[in-house]
Length: 480
Image 1 (cartoon, rainbow, N blue to C red):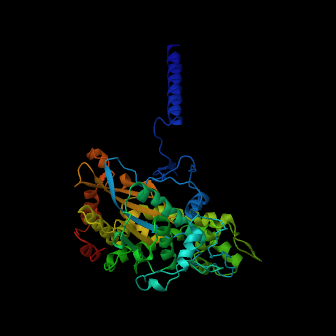
Image 2: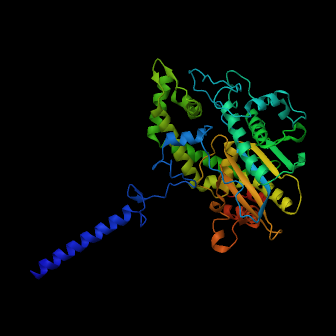
Image 3: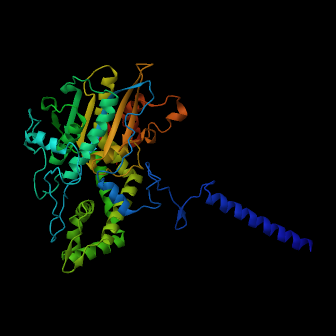
């Protein structure tokens, strides 16, 4: 009898413990690690989740909508936020060009009929769109650096050409410019009322979509768009590496990274079946379809709410799109987790980050040039910079993405300067590898400029390993 009573008591106690454990897990009072196939997995939360709209699991359609960046959606913006005793002294803005027509066409399908003329009474619309077109149609008062002078200043084709900026892309950057104007000029008076040309530093690649995106942002940003003060320098490389583009080790990392991409695609049987189905629909070999990069064309159709192609053999569907987009997301995630891409990113991003920190140091010394710097670039420009900064959780750059480096001066200690880094309006400073431990080590409310300088001048090479102490040594290191 005594044994039976003890057994019942133990059973009741075990049940109570199980109930308490489940209750704690249900109310999130103790952490529960997600598992996949019996193996504990890493959190898939991004750096910038939005609890109100973020789906509980990775959703390819949701991710595609974010990538489209359709104008009109209310946006959070933390640019220009700092303790009251800090003064904004410079801002360095990296943008990806806005929405564009595809770079690739799906063979044997009709080209998407998207109008690339800029029309004031067509959505999406911006209050400055018509004035922007009128201003651009008069032509620049001063020539840009060659070969930029030969590029059109705005889109004017009724049927878009490959890679051409659309009206959506122009509106995206008019909005970016107006947002930054309200914060940096109206609130913080970053540029004086009599601002001079040397207080702007403008660079773009030799593509019409990047030049036009930069012009749209500037038109929304500047209080007086004076052609005599707007001069774009040409950047031949998408990495903005200027005279430091030759880097053999970076190219080796890139080759290894491309091999990783190939193997990931090879092991995805669902993706291969999807390509086979789509190739049958458009009546071409699977290999040819894959080479045509169909996701680029499908994303354009998706962003512009245009139906996917149909032939006599059937239609490309949303299910096909979801499979390819899901693989793209998985590839992006694995790329960020692998050291191969990090090595490429550190070497690829170093020249432009080094230029940026040098300009910040000059401003901190009291020089008044390049108070506002704009780099009008590509996804392949921003992605390596994000990775090099340690922001492995940041989303792949959407259309019209913006990455901003702000330099602040402490009014109470004028010789001390701090930085903030923002991605699409979200403060990500303390997610960077060089500032994530700052709060534990210092009472200062912002990240010191010295942290970024030390990272660029030293820690980037330490992260690469091999004992290199400068960019040239790191690029030419043997034995990778």
